[in-house]
Image 1 (cartoon, protein in one colour):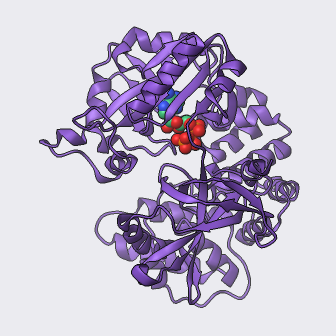
Image 2: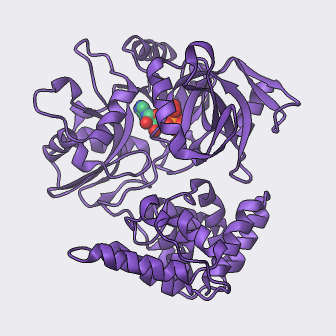
Length: 505
Ligand SMILES: Nc1ncnc2c1ncn2[C@@H]1O[C@H](COP(=O)(O)OP(=O)(O)OP(=O)(O)O)[C@@H](O)[C@H]1O
């Protein structure tokens, strides 16, 4: 397969607004890929390279001065081999070797091919939004059922691997199991309007957990091998030795636990979400900073000592936690009366948490999709939206990037539709951060506004929505204010325009 065919498909998919058309276009290309090309092409079209990191940034790319080739000639396999060299080059002379490899590939690329390769190398092509369309396309082109393809994707966390398995057929897809050490897409919840509504929907065999205001963690342990992943499946093990130590002390041989982690202040109340997230980025706590220690709380167990539990009911999965770490269970009440559930909710709020999660004890662990078995109950409704741009402030905010342009996800196409603006809720610290961070994500700017690639998710509180002829989705936010940034979320996990439209009713 030629690189130009991938480039053409990538731009067709980006341009087409219909999900069906996008799927057809992708499937059309995948059908012509050989077994070896398939995972590579799936990776590229999802904005990833199979090698993981190439260590090629804007700096090295901007030094390339090669004239584009007039005619396309590059083959997919050839470019993949060059990426392999870039990823593995190390030691003396590697800088020159890397530069030579880059120059050779870019020199042979036409202008659209060069643009595509730059976007791929810098991560600009990465768009989680495409994952749904890509699983559809893999199912279409291999003739395997969509549910089997999705399950394999959830368990492998990898679209290229899923594609390769699907090509081998049903047995290969079904043969994928949990693997301790390989992160699984986390299970998600559906928002409930009220606690009573959630209890009515799931009762009486349910558990009510605190919804802790921390960050999601998935912990894997096999013997003394321990890994800790975030909500987006980033491996942060080396930054959290405090968590690793707790896991190492558990009386078991192998386990996968799902939970939440946070820092607690002296008063036992949670410190801010930003504080917790900063630990994932900033590395191990220095000794003598006990207030920056992360505490884990677990609410699910996917595997224990050789037994996979994802297809077992929650009651059994909780029993598994209790058998090895009852002291680390998230505060919970099992089969409560309505009054006990209400008391638990009030206690969660009084302790400084977000609300509660109401879960069916019969529910299986269904990852990656928002299911009915987990209902989240919070006193205020918030939405996760994507920052599409920001306007330069005036008056006291002159020189700061302030008023945010907010987008909601179109579930059909994965694209983002602008639904409103806000400059409320922005502290000086956030303004400073925005002004420093946003230009790194900019696509272009005019006199008033810096426009961004859709990469940054922000949690917004609203009073409601109203019909609007000014905004492209026909709906606009009312009294939106910023709660916080959500570095643990990717744009494909943002709320949909349907969720905003539902507020009109
Ligand atoms: N007891 C709990 N059970 C499950 N998830 C919990 C619990 N306590 C806190 N959480 C957090 O809540 C999230 C589940 O809610 P949801 O599926 O709506 O994800 P979310 O969109 O990240 O939610 P939110 O924005 O409300 O944190 C989990 O990802 C986890 O980080």
